[in-house]
Every structure is written in structure tokens, then in C-alpha cells.
Length: 242
Ligand code: PL3
Ligand code: FE2
Ligand code: FE2
Image 1 (cartoon, rainbow, N blue to C red):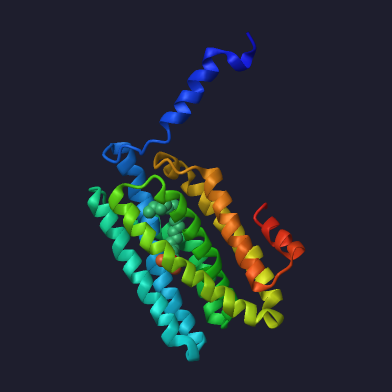
Image 2 (image 1 turned 90 degrees about the vertical axis):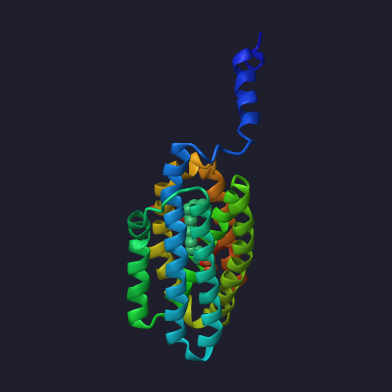
């Protein structure tokens, strides 16, 4: 009998078929992982609100539009808070805050220096691409209540990503060097945040490889939309491998 036809292989294959079912949302293991993932998302949405309001102070002529984006983030935060409540989970907000602290620090620094391109790149490209990829993967394995909320949220996140892309595209000539620098400093943070959340995400049946793939698609599409060429995009993506 060839090894490929052995019964063990068949068992593995049937396990795979089982894993397309939704997880049990009521187990302690699920709720424990959800208490951290839920906190990350709530904190991320809250900081996104603050960040768009802050960016509005750097681009006063766009402050009203940025306020609209910020208000959407507040709505997202409330939606995800309801998702946790619906499952009887209380979010570990200390963990959530710590999860974002390095990225938050870099954003605050750029804000203080008045570096608009860096602020927009961190919030509207990196964080939004991270959110879009995570939400896409989550929608496939979420409980029905959270699925509906997340589907509404992800549509807004594309608007936010698009806002960042358009501003950076219009200003690419003057901000390319700043962009490359911001990418070098912050893309590795996104990678380590992904590493950090991978175990809990796995409990929610969210696959790490899939998360990385979805992120790279959203990230690379954004850079292309901004007007960077393939070589520049490859170079920027490689900054994650440090
Ligand atoms: C700004 O619009 C959004 C900022 C939130 C970023 C959160 C990224 C989440 C990564 C962890 C996996 C979450 C799965 C989704 C669960 C609700
Ligand atoms: Fe959001
Ligand atoms: Fe957003």
C-alpha cells in the first residue's frame, strides 16, 4: 500500500472536513481567547477614533471629513463591545491597550512632529489593512451576531483605507521617503502583533497563514493604488522580515 493511501491519511482528511464547522462559542477556552481578541478590536477601534480626530488637527481643511471617519470608528467600537457582551465575555482591556502600545507610541511621536504621511500610513494603511484582513477571516468563523456586525464594519474600513490611499497618492512626490521610513519602523510591529495574537486567533479557528495572506493582499493593493511600483512594493514588504 502506498503511504498516501494509508488509513492515517484518510483520518487527517476527515479531520479537515470537520474543521469547516463553526467553533463552540460557549466553551471556556473560546471565551478566554475571545476576552483578549475582543479587547484588541475594541481598543483598536477606540484608538482609530482618536487617531482620525488627531489627523484632523494636522489637515484642518479635511477635519470635517476625518471626523466622519472617526465617528464610524466609535460605532465599530460599540458594535464589537456588543459582540463580547452577547457571548458573555468581558474584554481584557489592559491586554488590548498593551497590544497597541508601540504602534500608539509611534503614532503619537509622528503627530507631535506634524508628520501627516506617517500618521496616515500608520492608521489608514497599516491598521486598516490589518483590521480588514482580520475581519475577513473572522467573518467566516464568527457567531451569527458578530458576523452581521463585522460585515457592516468591514465595509467602512475600506472607506478608511481609501482615504489614506488617496491622500498619500496625491502627495507621493513629497512624502515617498517619509513613507519608506514609516514602513520600516511600523510594518515589523504589525508582524509581531500578528504573531502575538496567533494562538488566540487559532482558538477562534482563524488561521495565521490566512491572516498573513489577507494582510499582504490589502497592504500591497494599497501601495499599488498610491502609485508605487512593483520593486518599491517588494522592498517595502520585505521590511516585515526582520
Ligand atoms: C480601525 O478601523 C480598526 C482597528 C482595529 C484593528 C484590529 C485588528 C485585529 C486583529 C486581531 C484579530 C481579530 C479578529 C476579529 C474579532 C472580532
Ligand atoms: Fe473601524
Ligand atoms: Fe477604520
